[in-house]
Image (cartoon, rainbow over all chains, first blue to last red; front, side, top):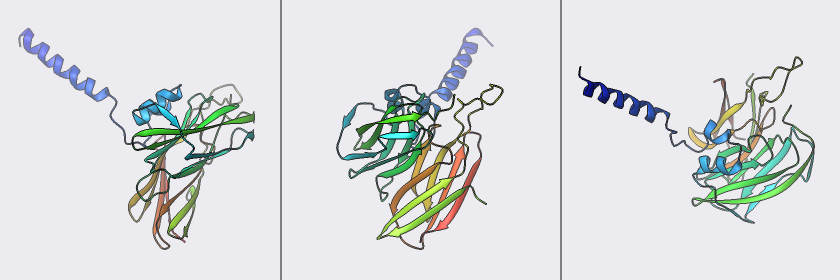
Length: 150
Length: 101
């Protein structure tokens, strides 16, 4: 085998491994480290939705307590009348801010309720993806006892 | 018994679903008595199917509370089936099925 064909093979192999490690475009509500392990909310949104430009909107309804005595269980609910494709909740001060992404197929109400952990007093942001754009509503939750362990 | 408890009720064509999953949801930040970190262990993916069609799916981070609670609503009717399943980061899965009331 001459040098040229060896190089060719090496090139092909590295191209193949490169393709393997390239981040595939994930279906939205599937867990991925690339989305959830981000330290900045904007990066998490970028990786989850392919955009991080957000517009505050009063059509996004975020419900969370003003004061949470126990940061380990804070009820949060997000609802909107918009035609939403997906909903996400960001907890700004947490080590990894993105808490949940939910896919809303046609026929499902644009609503999600869950309970989150909050490490300390933080801004909570509800993100709704509608028509390819991101709309948000935010609220500060005061946390008396943190819920992230440590 | 399954780790998932589901309540699904038809309210005028909109099925109101409430579900509780039993899971430790370790963040990986907590330490045990000897100061060693407890490894992360949490539910990553949750999906709900009604009559074989996906009606809701979500991805969780470790910042969802222990024994996660999830509530959502979709258009369906009494008597339809509803199956909710989850998968955690260690590959364990569980599912539960119920009939909409």
